[in-house]
Amino acid sequence: MRDDTTFQRPASAERRRGVSRQSLATGLYTVLRNGLRRDELSVHYQPRIDTVSGRIKGCEALVRWHHPHLGMIEPERFIPVAEETGMITELGEWVLFNALATHRQWKETGLKPGGLAVNVSPRQLLEPAFADMVERLLEATCVEPGDLELEVTESTRLDNIDQVVNTMLRLRDIGVKFALDDFGAGYASLDYVRKLPIGAVKIDQSFIRNIPDNHKDALLVKGMVNMAKDLGLKVVAEGIEEPAQLDALRPLKCNEFQGFLFSRPLSGDQAMSLLAQAPAYAV
Ligand code: C2E
Ligand code: MG
Ligand code: MG
Image 1 (cartoon, rainbow, N blue to C red):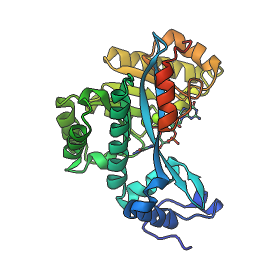
Image 2: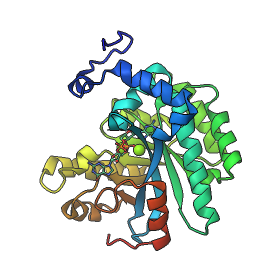
Image 3: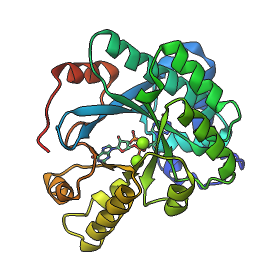
Image 4: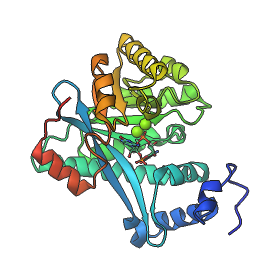
């Protein structure tokens, strides 16, 4: 299929796998429109671990798309398509509702899931109705606003930062928290830390990957952690896969760890079983 010129980025990855951005967009549109195909979408949950107690402090919700013919399509492929086509509004609302409803269900069964982190695209924060939508879903699912942390990725330039700040402040006033995702890897990390009302930063996994061997990355992570802590922000280190990375991170006293070393993202049912076991990880 020919690529639609509306999509500006080259579709090389999709072409390699024989799927154009156009057909990803068409597929996603069908999934969102067609109730019967909605079950191709699901939300997985990856635990975030408290660095002092080693206990699960909360989970990050991560969307999954299981296409009947193409198999699992990674969010890194379809989220940008959803952003470019505007479908992220509907997709984002679907993810938030499902994650909140699941969190509520866990609490009702007597579990202590802690916080719930949900990714939001900057484009969603620019929508005038975004704050109302979040409030409405919190009320509908009876989740405490203080249990919700929205992770804002800085992978896209925020053109209208004042509008984004207003939306964030409105939600922060009712107790919703914000984290800056992929910290250090974006266009304007320090500018966002300065301007956005965030309570936490998540250090991008590209820095964590090489800290055991790369002195420069180790110094950069140390600098980012210290700066964030001086600013009163919580620090999450994500993408931890190896014990050596954990060893290098331990002295820096981050607040939370996340990564395959502790747990991969799990289906809702798997996450519920893990929460029921209430594991204490060696940190
Ligand atoms: P993110 O928010 O930074 O999420 C972390 C990503 O790293 C997840 O990939 C997770 O599976 C992966 N990860 C976690 N631990 C490790 C590790 O130890 N090693 C490695 N190599 N990877 C690890 P995933 O689920 O493929 O999501 C990719 C990105 O897609 C997310 O990055 C987020 O930016 C975006 N995304 C996912 N779900 C949503 C969503 O519901 N809404 C929006 N707007 N974006 C989403
Ligand atoms: Mg995230
Ligand atoms: Mg991240």
